[in-house]
Length: 394
Ligand SMILES: Cc1cc2nc3c(=O)[nH]c(=O)nc-3n(C[C@H](O)[C@H](O)[C@H](O)COP(=O)(O)OP(=O)(O)OC[C@H]3O[C@@H](n4cnc5c(N)ncnc54)[C@H](O)[C@@H]3O)c2cc1C
Image (tube, rainbow, N blue to C red; front, side):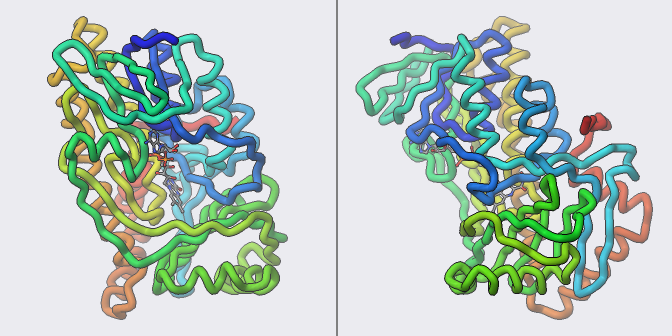
């Protein structure tokens, strides 16, 4: 087996696979190490989807598999927030865009990216784990569980929120547990969603319906820790009835078409993104609650920043694992990550609050933002992090 690469990526989640595919186009050789390759899945086997906004779509639009994946994605044309019966809609068309982004089924997307990476001559996929690694002046060496040893100029830690590489590098995390869980599932409904993602602000956590094709939607329902188990154990017709009531019947009769999954709601971030010849990427560096659909989008911004650093290093002939290159990545990403983690944390507190004063402030803030056109546009652009590149949903 080949043992020398330009880049070793530990972890095979969606951001890691996108990084590998885009780095491979730039002629870097990559070893991607993942202990659990994706299984065969077809929607609606798993109810997990993610809304990917414009900035991240730049990494996906051009991939040869996008047209096929797009058939299974919902188009996000309108975002609607309903706070105690008062609905405020934000249309992408107001910014001159066809859509904010797409609601993408994650297991299908990951499996498809994996298949693409598997065919790429510059990518070696290994079902394995890194046990230890050591960085020196010229390269980093990783020892795998299988006994293999690999060498590369740069090691990317994308092995998820419980990253062993991060821990081995001694990088501490700052954590917060909200004692909330998100229940996710897929629904079929009798009324159309009109490409609208609707978020109900409820005490205990938001209840968000995100569109998928053919009168289907995904649900992300956040609630205090003790509630979801009761819901999971309820009979299917009772769950469907509860969802119909909580969604104020906007989608009509509800049919549950997937199992229900539970996700703990936490935030986590680190004070650095680098170690010798190593960078942290995606949930290895940051975890946020689903409120505001930021998680994967922050990770895709990491991928874009790292690719920019690789391009700059190539232009100047620099070593891609040199400290100066890694520092550029950290400077580009760390302030933004901290802002978005703190912003999502604050938003989550405000949405789930039981305090009636804060609830009133929240509603007044929403009305103010929605009512003032320049502020409304600014809020939409901030959420999108748009660079004025329209999405073509054809
Ligand atoms: C309910 C819910 C809804 C969400 N909705 C949205 C949304 O609408 N929009 C959005 O942007 N984001 C959303 N997110 C966030 C998004 O889904 C995640 O941020 C993203 O999928 C995480 O990707 P990742 O690659 O960092 O982590 P993971 O997907 O966890 O990938 C880490 C990989 O590392 C592997 N691994 C583990 N240990 C090792 C090891 N020792 N060595 C090598 N590999 C290892 C794992 O097997 C895994 O494949 C949501 C999250 C939740 C929970």
